[in-house]
Image 1 (cartoon, one colour):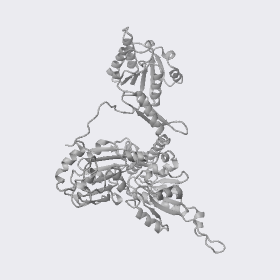
Image 2 (cartoon, one colour; image 1 turned 180 degrees about the vertical axis):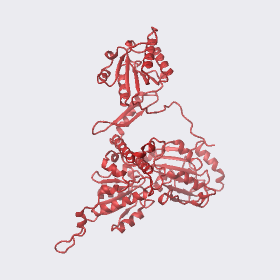
Image 3 (spheres, helix red, strand yellow; image 1 turned 120 degrees about the vertical axis):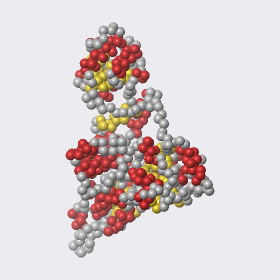
Image 4 (spheres, one colour; image 1 turned 90 degrees about the vertical axis):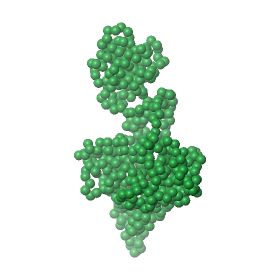
Length: 614
């Protein structure tokens, strides 16, 4: 039986509350109450402050907000009580009981006048806070009591709302951090550290993606209600790369709108924040159009440019038109330090226009001079062939205008990068492209994950294949050989089908495999964002990898799969006895030593020495 991860206690369930038109009741009128009120107002909450002395005793900020009509301040002593008991604690609880009964609909309560460091004469006693907390709990109203954590149902995290660096206006982007009571001051410091490292375009990117998302839904208003939660952000889908059926001529409005929303999710995942933040409405509308996105932005050759290609001088001498060039270059596995010198030169010194695949990381695009136009592939889910044609057409149009075009691809352009198709397409239209190799992720990805594709005593050869064929069709995969490593590119989104093909003993799935079925205990590694600082490696077995992915949470595309026993060869003390005689009988022992009783082992981040060297 599979063993799932054990929960580790003492954490918080992090939620974001929607408080639109909900009543947030604050007891106390000090500076902390003003801070809590501001947070609640930003959440569009109805804020009511109840404190002894009312507005006259409130801090300056609360009085100002009351005068502006942003919140209400009530005098605790002037309100009626549901109890005639004389004790202060009992009376305050009675006042709140009567107020809540009369008002109704209070969603959250926060007590701030228990704050440590205030005058003991003005600070609420623990007994009084306890009485109010019991009242709230009896009415199922969550309560926060400052500096008395045992009475709290929720706590306030150290939060920050990102503002637009140009206008200073607030954006929808918020984040918060908590130390779960282990260091509130430290949480504030960590928040500042994170803020200082966030790209300045982060908030603007959220604003523009929100507009793009709205436009994608508004483009087909008839089916908007059917699509709520299907854009891949809040629907629980772990990856935006989940397969989508290939486009058909008879595509319905719902299918078209769903495809557009999936595209918005992919744009959010892959495009650089700077690019997202600078999107214009014209670009958004063009992106959501079914065709012509890149051509509409690059533009066809002008009449003058077309005429120049056939113009002759008065002396009968042909004037040579400007003749553009096209480069097909590989950007490597991801990290900009792995670019070849030739690719770096093409991007920084030669290019007038860069037409980039969507998987090229922002760190690579960032080295391109700001004077160079950069366009990113609009590969709608299920429309890879259409997007590919669009890219090639745009490259030719730009080259006819005399521009130097760089077609930027991840890894090496000749390894499942369609370089051959583009060479033939450009050649047929009068352009002989220059192909610049790149460091292929086939080798670099496993290396960064600590997995050698060949290793004496573990793997004598390796084979590379794709997880998806032309038009999204399933492909034939190689059969099992213990001494061989299998590297699968573009297979994560179709992992269930890949696993079925590799392990099937009978049925249709066996027709998609050349050779013997893979044992269920064969090690497999999923390598995500290889060579990047947020690289993650998840290792398991064919039997358990699906369960591992389901329980590990959100995926980080792009990813690749490595299958074979060489995965164990450099783990810990290493194991180079995999191909020895009698080694198969020790496989279960080997796996137990490697995985323990877990479904998987995961490693976040790059090798420390490589990261330090970079």
